[in-house]
Image 1 (tube, one colour):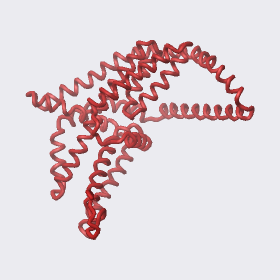
Image 2 (cartoon, one colour):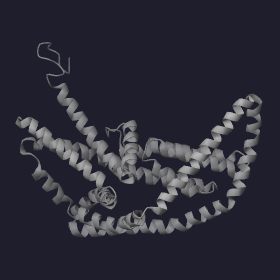
Image 3 (tube, rainbow, N blue to C red):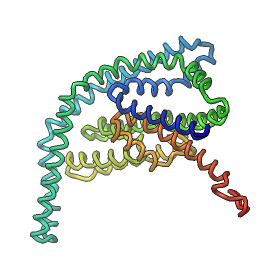
Image 4 (cartoon, rainbow, N blue to C red):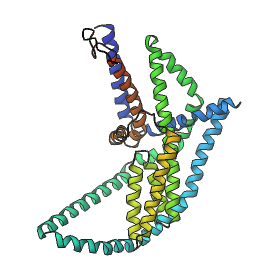
Length: 360
């Protein structure tokens, strides 16, 4: 075995070990990954505070306390509003269902005039099958949520361990990066540093920027839907803002859900049109103000690749996979572009005999 092939096998085995450990320890890694994400998000602010004359330890204490106290304050302020909306919605749910049935009767009569009895029967069977599937899925979800013994433990660890992990990672961030730099193979250290800088640029542009975009959109949608009088408007808006981390999913999901609630809540079309107006304003703000200012247009991550990474991470590792999906996507994208550049500059792409190169 040559030295080159030995290095390849070493990195492949190391990658396999890391993946196996992630899979085996996925049940306890959530607070550590969440803490790492918060520390990464707050690190630029800590650097600015250091430049202003504050020590790293004091900056870390101030940022950690401020961030989690702000999170607790937001939850404390929003929880009563959300609770009131949920209670009111549950009380009005029978009336809303009757209104939806009443509004659907003209459509059903129109469909009956165009469909044959066989088509109607197949439509009833399909509706019953999908309804049964939804009921089974919801029952399985909630039963699993209740019966899994680690569910409460995971929540408690996320609440109590995440701030501790955030504090230590944020305080020792520079030391971690310095140690990793010392561990790099000396022959390829500069090349690896360049790729790490590219990965950090993509993550900084997308993760930090998109998080601010989601918060801004959640506020716009939640306040806007509440102002126009939509029931559960605050909850729907907040969820739409969080889902905006996946391109187009937040706007489309929020628009569909909010429009359905508006149609059930009122008999006219004023409220549904106002709902569409709120999401149109949010979409314009996202496309022309928030995303260009906070995210930028040169992150190197295609929306399709982002959606695939998030869905794949969620399917394999749950919420932990969603948190890890974008860093993994960024690393994969940077390494793929680096490998492609090496391939285009190699003899595999253009042989010396042909005289062709990347620029020919």
